[in-house]
Image 1 (cartoon, one colour):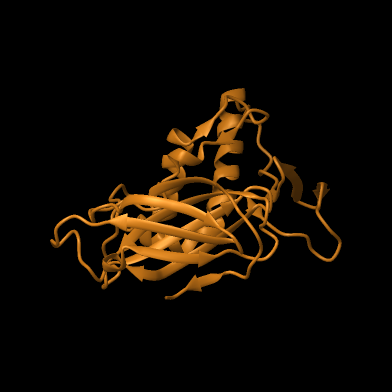
Image 2 (cartoon, rainbow, N blue to C red):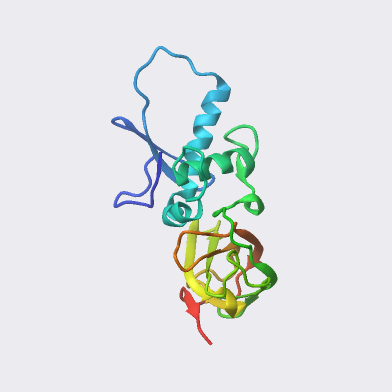
Amino acid sequence: MARYKNGINGPVSGKIGNVVGGSWRGIDYLRSLPDTSNKTFSEKQKNQHFLMGLVSSWLKPLKLIVEKGYQAIMSGKTPMNACVSYHMKNAVEGNSPLEYMIDFAKVILSRGELLIPLIREVLSLIDAVLHIKWENASASIFNNEDDKATIVVYNPAKKAFVSFEDVAQRADKEVMLRLPAGYAGDTVHCWQHFVNANGNMVSTSVYLGELLVVGQGSAGPIFK
């Protein structure tokens, strides 16, 4: 299944050849029709297949972040497959397609050995600015001052992610980010994790919470 944005003819709904278009909770998606088979799937199997496609579609824009964030998960799966599997089991509420909802507080976009950021404060300021502050434990191989911070922001109303990679070092203890124009009045969900200087170790991501965006801006970091 693939998620897509409106093409020249707008969203697709229904069958076109061997492709079916549809929408789920505002997420437009495309999926290919299965090969003809006499095998009958149970309702549970159908729901599981549907759930897998929807979780995959939601995570697809974060493919590069997930590939780095789940690189250490040795489960015989690709990083993305491992990430999808975790979220299907732990971060989705509901028992049927009409009930499925992602529990943003349980979303984990990276899993690793680096120490997590100890979040002190997350503020939504005017002009669509997010101000994030954290504390650090004593320096170690799992806690280096030059570890780089990645912040991911999801806007359910816009059905869009904004990712800020390597926007600050662990030693900075804070970062200010300006979100895209048009986010004013929208509620967003945020996550943060660290990646070491070599890019081969990460921390487990931390959910920063749900914030109401104030004012307008254009996406990017703000350096003091």
